[in-house]
Length: 537
Image (cartoon, rainbow, N blue to C red; front, side):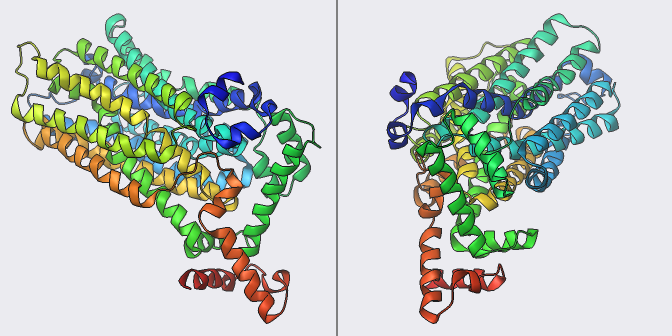
């Protein structure tokens, strides 16, 4: 607790009881965030596996020298099949999480990932089996990308919600780092088909751990409340916060949950898919939150971070590290930088510096790194057989700096935002929309980057300039459109986006014409139209 007081600087940390920051909330967060590690380990594994000599031989990958475009297309197809599955999994995850609960949905997602990894490891040179395995694994990874931040956010105390939700990104970075070093160890110590089979099956490790850990975790109290299981919600909350049921903090948190749910049900009483869609898109405050979530996830992918994650060995080769061993070693260092930077951000900045400022300064920093690398490759490209020049070593440093800057802003902050700003009834749908958007543009990046590196200028310098330009433009997106949310409770997000004031105005209108809110509001679309009308006033 003393350490948290030193590194977390917000009003909630000063006022909330110290008991709520006990070991249980951190253990629950770590358990759930193995869902992020399933994503991270695949990012790191597949890019390195594509460069392993035995994989190239068994899967008949064209030579980079003889057919660079053919090699780029096949590599992109292998990588991007997972993103297709992730996109589909993310779309359906919201429905599963709302119907079955967050905990059971994560158990299902972990099981699907394990099945997909087994298919990949057993493919033995058969591309169709590899594609099927990656698609199946993608279904589980995509679902986990929706449910994990949702589950963590709904369980986290408000003072450290940013840090706890950002642990999802830390586990992505940790999984990526472990994958990079797994590939490096495989090329040094394994022979034959085991050189690529071991890395492929190791992708199942985080999913197995997630499956085991979730058996010991409780359901989200906010999902239980939404299902009108208030006694269960109270039991889970008292256990998680380590406070008695009659403690003022517990009564206040349950009261805020109840009040927000009542507000939402007064706006739209029904809970069908179409009711929730109308609530999301026709009520101005909800629509703004959905569009912010989509915009943040598009921006996150267009930084180019996953272009480096998926194709780091090839990028390092373009910067002068010609051997597979040196490229994979540099990739391992890149993974360490990502993990350390993300951990530093979560400890020292997430709930102190805030989300908005973190996004602003890292937009400029990432753009500068990408532009330097692009200009270096254009002006002074490395030559085969010659040592890397000093300017080339600085280009390598810029790749590492880019990774660090991403983890100080666009990596964790986007997941924090999209999981904390939605209304309770719309949270799973909003996170699913954001996650599906993330996977769609992840697919675009994964599919386009090999061709960009092969065709957009010598050494692919144009790819770095394109991603750098996107980074600079994101500064203006954040400056004009993204509010600060650090230290706010989930239930107070409605105040930030104008929903609470909207409800007061609607109630005042009803009273002026006679009749009660209960009589007038039966969950039909007229309520939403009234909300839209108030926005125009």
